[in-house]
Image (cartoon, rainbow, N blue to C red; front, side, top):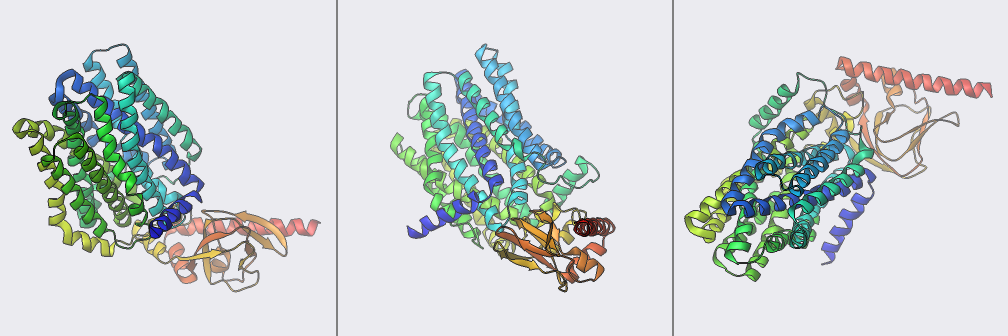
Length: 552
């Protein structure tokens, strides 16, 4: 218990120190709640129009455009700043859900409603890939990145619990139109939360176009078995979740003969499991090996679904769905974190776009499979087949997964930090990753002199967090912050340090040895030009300071 409390405190304290990540996670609450609420309202509406068969078919039709468009949208998003793309995703969610609410309010024909429902289904696929690529650019340490993944998992678990329960209550007292209107309003709040982050997160470098970049992403996944396996494994859970979405509707209203509101309550049980395992997922922060957690979660998940096939009754279903939800939350957090560790950083949004598309496709497959299985053998057969899907996949790939886990060490946080700096942004991905691996993390307290005027220069420094002041001959010249570097003049011109750099606040830095820095910036024309321009600008800054001092 003490270890669990310690893990929880560490995750929360790590995340609360980063204001930008806090805003992203606060907005993600609105996304996650809105996604589950709108999906549930859609399933209930479709069930009211034509039973479990129409519910399954409509769910499939909604997901196919999402599966096709998710990689394309993720690629387009990376052409913008990631903060701008994220804000745009939330606006799209608000607008499309509002449109569905309007159609339901005026009692539009169901074909019109189903057509409009494609909008939210596609809009909701945009957030996760963009956020997965954006958070490494905002995180200052690998621990912050893992912590934000863990918190995202908690948010999804609470959302699966709270959103369906609240949606069930809204459906009991109101209608599907009210549910969609509330989702639109909630997503508008999310857009407001991330609006201040517009312009943050460097867009991808100019290349041969979006089609070419998608092909590059596909080629990377095809040529890299670790990324391919993780995308397949994470996508496979969509079969179980897609089937479960439809089966819960049938279980509540057909198997247990309960009302539509119980669809929300049973779905909430699935989310409650994720809430109950927050201590387990908190312990993933800083953990070097994630494969054991993935395999254990899949085994528990399969056992819980098998229990739904053989144990009747509302109470048993509630308990088993809670267990399955806890296993799913652990699996998703560990799997996504491991994928971030192996994916090429410059393709991160696109790789997660492929994952989102894969999950939409498997959700569609599961949604279509559920009514077929119910028709063939009823709910017991359907739950038994779903129970076997993921454990079998894990059994086949277990040895490979363990091997991936041992070698997954891509420094995504450090790469994202370097990519935000003009002097390093033009470097090819392998060179940038190699440079990131050479960075030495340093923590300094306020008042510490990192470099001193007149000393010999032996390292270049990158600021990950905090503020540092540049002082020359006792006079303040400039303030340096996150995403800026210092120390390049002494290295590029082989002269003593031209100024003292002192920490104004506690700060996190990365140091790069002189020889590594010089090879990196002189071996690439664009990088050398950018570094030269930076050094010249800094020298001019010092000259202006000297001139001002003489004029006093």
